[in-house]
Length: 120
Image (cartoon, rainbow, N blue to C red; front, side, top):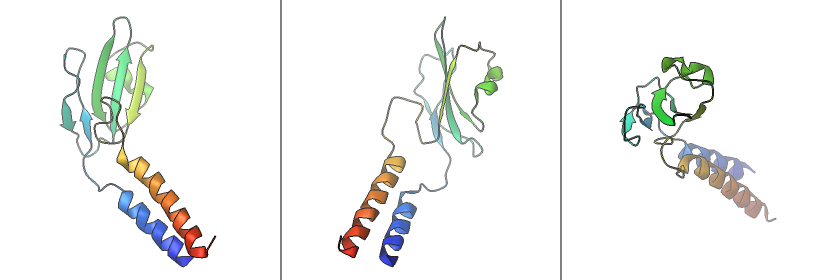
């Protein structure tokens, strides 16, 4: 059981990202290109996307707090869709993020390793 715990702890440590600034796509409604990557300020821990309708516009930014209530900075209506994420370039096209998938894989691997070590 001790080897299972050690393996699980190692797996968690290996899948944790190093502390560094987040990278997000950034654009305003006037920009044509919403895929510009930018290194966010240290306090910005979220990539935020706001999509409005009639007319359709997209805003992408780095923010430290991500709530629908924080939309007043661009004065938009309440029919906007707000989404937030916390991995590099996560507010661009749909992408696979190795951090979350790696953690799940490491957890499953640790469980199977522990069962194998116990002879089950």
